[in-house]
Image (tube, rainbow over all chains, first blue to last red):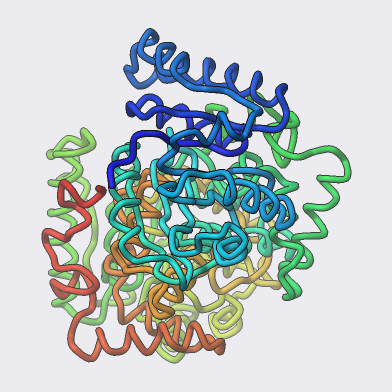
Length: 292
Length: 292
């Protein structure tokens, strides 16, 4: 089937980015949120992203602003879903909230609509049944859309296999590299690896093997990367990192979760709060002379 | 103390690279191996590296060739050690071999000589006593010297702390970023993280969650890196990877070790044998169109 109209549920950071890229790629886009304020902020965020893209990647400002102008921002579910070929859901990472959203949209969506969830660590099988169309339900998980251009396509056991090539092609049309996650896995592909090396970094720190700066330097110099695991944690958010880490049973993860909790309790959530392992907007790892 | 003369033990890949960088940095360098053929190959490898550096990083060919000409290549331990201020040992990764080397050089080295081992996953405390000077014994672990310019300084509990700043400064003088590994750890800093994410990648593959290409794509696109975990494994060598992985007790590591063993048994050791997960010299992940 040919996807023309895309409906984004949830106007947070990720939903906003997916909606913007879809509009830039020429899709008709609606973005839905129950909070009008969230929709306002979403539009402002899009404007900032367009400015950045205009500065850094050659997007024409005018093309970006035009794309934003074509998007329907709405808190009305029926307006949002009208004629939608595909939903990509990025609402709060909470099973009950996602369930109620999928129950609602399962009832009001056109017959043709493909249902996709952008969940970060929950599984599509958790919502497939309540949506009323498990065969048309699949995870379609974006990372950052504009910098990390990969999209995970993760079916659940009941997903109709014919959906996969459609979603691969849709991902490519949004300038993403699509990868297939053949079995449900809470970390998709990349996040499983990310969690593993960040966990190892956490254990090096809490075990007193290295300072966080030295651990980050090792990563940055070996891999020629602009930040190491603790810089990455700051960009992910230490609250999110704690959320994932504190459920892991092993002693090393528990020690690291306890450290993360200290930061979170002190209001140090990472880049978004101005301080995490480093201080922002000018963290030490970006200073000239960090790598000596 | 001022280090002027450096003695490299073992003329394999890493010893050769450290010796060359030390000569380029202006040190007097000797490189020792019991096999004259290894010394010949070492000199040839240095010549190839100098050509590459001349092509890629602006080193002057003539300066590189001059540096090589200043190095003493020898299978005579007494010649190698003459007036050496520091030994960096890169002999075969085998406890008995390293023990016999350190016992021998402990006896013939000048009083002043600092002893460092470049061991990949053994610990300095394993050799400190037999060397006869545990206080002057420390791990000084290079990664690749010319691409991954980080050096781990890892004391054992008996290392004289005053050695650390000397080794940090020596590392910097070789254009490396020195990092301190405050406690003995078989994976230093970086290798612990490397092993963790490569192990996670292995589990994704053996668990049927993703293809090796999709796992690599996820890593490459998210981190803007030229290869993913399976490309990295090919460059490390699947025999080395098996060696580290097969000792890990968990089920996922065992499954991955079993897979690595199949490759190794089939002679597929990675880049060095022409084939591993990918075929060389032109692996799929370097093809245009891999990331779509």
